[in-house]
Structure formats: C-alpha cells, structure tokens
Amino acid sequence: MNDSDLINFMYILLFLAGGCITVFIPFVISYFIRPKTIEYQKSFQPYECGVDPFKQMWDYRFGISYYLYALIFLAFDVDVLYLFPIGTIYNTDKIGAVRGISEIFIFIGILSLAIIYAWVKGVFKWERKTVK
Image (cartoon, rainbow, N blue to C red; front, side, top):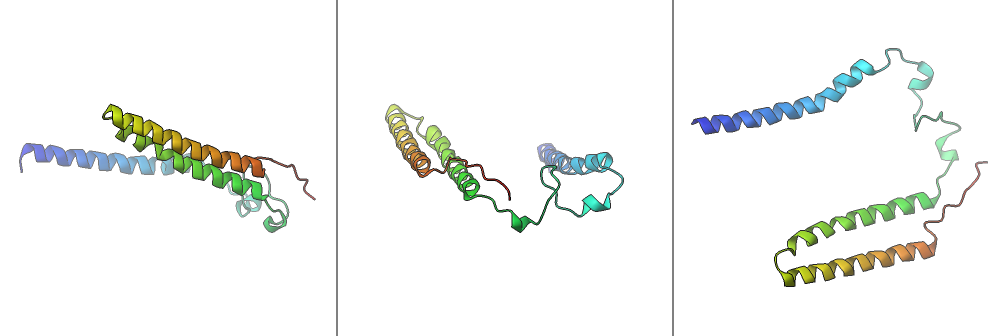
C-alpha cells in the first residue's frame, strides 16, 4: 500500500466517523434537554400537535378532501421531479433544447389539465363541518 491508498482510507474513516457523529448527536442532545420527570397521565396518551385528545379517534372522521388534496400534492410533487432530468439532458444543442422545451410545455399542460379537472370536481373546496 502506498501513501495515496492510506489517505483514501483516512477519508473513508473520516466520513464514516462524521456520519456516526451526525446520527448520534441528536440522541445525546435530546437526552440532556428532555424532561426528567414523567407525568403518568400524559405519558400514555397519544400526542398530536399539542392538543389534548378528546373522545376516541374513531368517533371523529376526517373528510375525504384532506386525502384527495394530499394525493394530488404527492402526484404533482413527484411529477415535477421529472422536469429536472429533461432540463439537464436537452441542454446539449439547439435542436435538443427546442425538443426539451416543447416536451416540458406538453408535460406542464397535461398537469394543468389535471389541476383544472380537480378544481372543477371541487377537490379544493374546504367546507367547514361542525363537530357534534
């Protein structure tokens, strides 16, 4: 083994140690800043956004609008990720750039039609419901 191999192994060990430290530092910090006493009443209850739970979870149902909105967001979020490779791969020449830009406009047009369809179907309307 020569000196460059040892230096490369030192880099690997340095990155491995940095990764381990990055993983374990939040556990150490949370150990020191956590509350030392445990309140029995709150320790075995579900915790959601700082609000004390009421009734049972199956007594309250979320509207389908929440799930549809989340699915639409997820679908468009993943679809937009396809724009980055198109933007980088067609940057080689003018013909490729024109083709890439036209494909991007077609893709965004199809996504826009999906948003318009969801809007017409009323997915983005948030009707306020009262809790009984």
